[in-house]
Length: 606
Image 1 (spheres, helix red, strand yellow):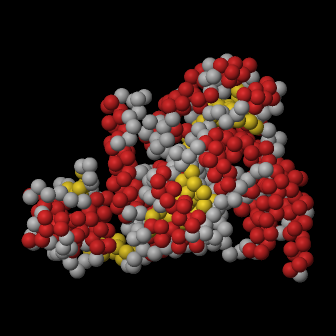
Image 2: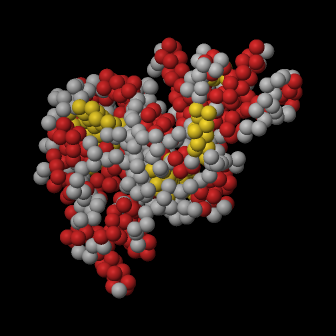
Image 3: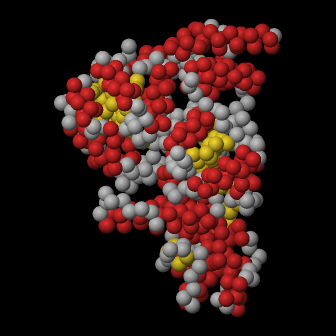
């Protein structure tokens, strides 16, 4: 079979997505590759199709047990024999995987990086033909990445131990230029074909909200998403416990996941989410890497993450099947302080020199600053994020909270001058404060702190009392992002930069896009061309089949496939094969029941 026949038979697609065919062609020609593709962009097919076409075995290095199980489950449902080797296997299961592998039953074997250099796996790899080594979540090899895993540094030692060097393919969803260089160097990729398909996920709606009460805002959002599946990310275990308990009390089917739970409970809760017994997963960032649950329709960040790479990866777990999905971040200034504290007090990585540790910490603080700008910027959120990943983007996407909200261009020179004057006046008195205090001083707020420092007697106190706090904060954020102001110290206090003199002296004027109205939550939109009754019936059938097969529902068919069935209404195998995501194996296995249900629905509707 050629690559198109493999794509159609096993994966049910008639055409490749952007970048997939180019990467597959290079791998089949024997060339190393580095593919940087967004979550949900179809990275797996890029190595699974060559794996099926090569004579030997493909070894996939994967960082998480849940990721391996998910991938292997999906492959078996598509008619592809695969296995995984990790710490979740019992000794008899471990031996059985090797027995079958020696018999040549598997084309793809997923393995944890820590298992690569075991005597058993080295002996097996030397006796078999390893045609391709795929490194999934390749950013884990870089100390500058957000998920550095020392075990990934052993991959090249494993490859060097093989009788013949296989093709090496590395994939990641997020990589700055620095991380990309690290991946190529540390994995020793040879003249790699490098392709970045673009980070834009057009089906995702991005929003940043700044509610006074986060839980009330969360409850309101979830109440509009009954029966939909989603993830709520929290920064701390304690917050996960509190939010999950409150959601269950208020009638939501929520479960929890964090590193403080027993392995047994984490496994149970994850399965409850994957099998749709719990529709909401409340979790720390310990949950989710590689989770291939396709029907996640929203990801809500209860707290701001420390960097845009983590945020984009976590938010990208929504809408993996291409359906409209929402990524909502609930921001507060406290999130910045908590993240800064965590960075300053993080455990020292013993694999790094003191100089490298210092540089890594500085790098993390800079990433936190960029993440904070994302939450406070007054321009298109998608444009800001794509620019961060060195990708050009239009200044209006129409599918983020800032674009939907409406802004007006305002000459903010006078306001900026007052802000700069305020900070300089305080600096002359050796007083330094953060954004919130500066806004309070300019607006003339009376409180104990202002009186204690005798600021209420200064001319700067209340000089901008007619300007709303929201607008003042927006101008301060603009001055920070543009480099007129900077923050320093354990608590981020404001200082002026040299550039600020141009504004203070009137040599430079600034225009700032300021919000026309207060931030409100607006949905990113729904698909309206779907027969909701038929869709519900198809989901119910899928759930029954999933229970019978003991697999998550989306492994049978994704929501996107069910929606395409609603549009095309297939009533026989030939018509079913035209549905996106329906391959020959699944059509033979499940086709009759789905076609029978659709035919009955059509007859009933007349």
